[in-house]
Image 1: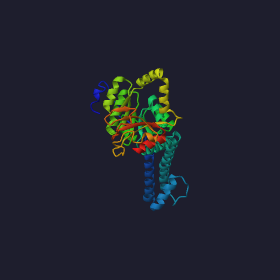
Image 2 (image 1 turned 90 degrees about the vertical axis):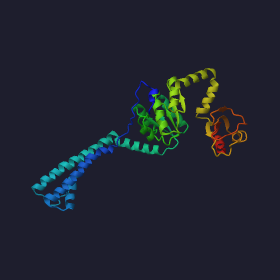
Image 3 (image 1 turned 180 degrees about the horizontal axis):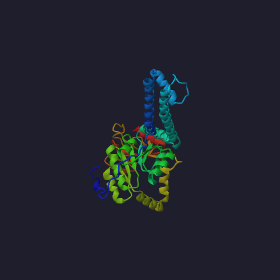
Image 4 (image 1 turned 45 degrees about the vertical axis):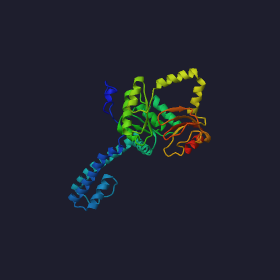
Amino acid sequence: MLGLAKFFPSRNPPKLTTTRPLNPLRRFRYPLLILALVFVYGTAGYILLLRWTPLDALFMTLTTVTTVGYEEVHPLGAGGRIFTMTVILGGVGTMLYTIGIFGELLVEGHLARYARMRGMERRIAGLRDHYIVCGYGRIGSQVTSEFVHLNTPFVVVDNNPAPLERLRASNFLFVEGDATSDEALIEAGILRAKGLVSAVDSDERNVFITLTARALNPALFIVARSSFPDSMEKLRRAGANQVVSPYLMGAHRMAALAVRPVAVDVLDTVLHGENIDLVVEEFMVPAASRMLGRTLGDSGLRSAGANVLAVRKRSGQLRINPPDSLVLESDDLLVAIGTREQVDAAERLL
């Protein structure tokens, strides 16, 4: 992350930390090690002190430590009984301590939480072409709601306690960690992801998240939040494909609602309505498409029922309401509206 001083010269970069739950079973390592040493101590003692066979010595140690209550394997003299008492003190004490740890983990929910986290990690590892949402605040939570509405797979990265509790309650996939760190983004599947939304409430952290994500996956589509206008260019230079200012967009929307309320309502219904059988979808003309060189009118896309609203040429030129005479080229991006069946049929023609 060299050269970040030109973005924020007076600030220190955020710490790259990731919070992950420790395996609660690790707490059993030392009690089990002590218990194993007690078995070695007891077995070796019966063999060396009382001249018993290894099997008899191990059996006597096992019955003593587990307090099963079998009779003595062989008669014990005074020395044997004193030695057995030391085995009881060491073995039973360690067993009780181990059982206490297990009960504590069970009551406090550590085992259940760890099992849930391991299951979540496996589900995240199986994702492909998903989206990563960094930050689950006011903006990030709305982004995830829209992804749920669009049936789009996503993973949230956050490390604040309150958002994490809401994520657990919502049963969303998430990574508990700092979104500026490589480890957290890799755990969220950034190498297999299709896009990333950086929605934390700090422009500085959004720049670091964008830089980190772009370095890890150069092909990733990144949308970054900007709270201040002078940060928008910095985010683009950091690698964001799109930069969104919630305040600027809110102002534009309020002005549009005041001047053209019906038009805005129609667009909202088409883009975000839950009970409308219309979708707006975008798809690219592949290099091997049979439609290359054909005009939009001859392609049959509109005859499939979908209406092509716009075409972004590979040169970057955006053609709104394109004419039938527009020639389709490789990597042209089409934006179409129609029912799901109509849009899918149009995409298959390509």
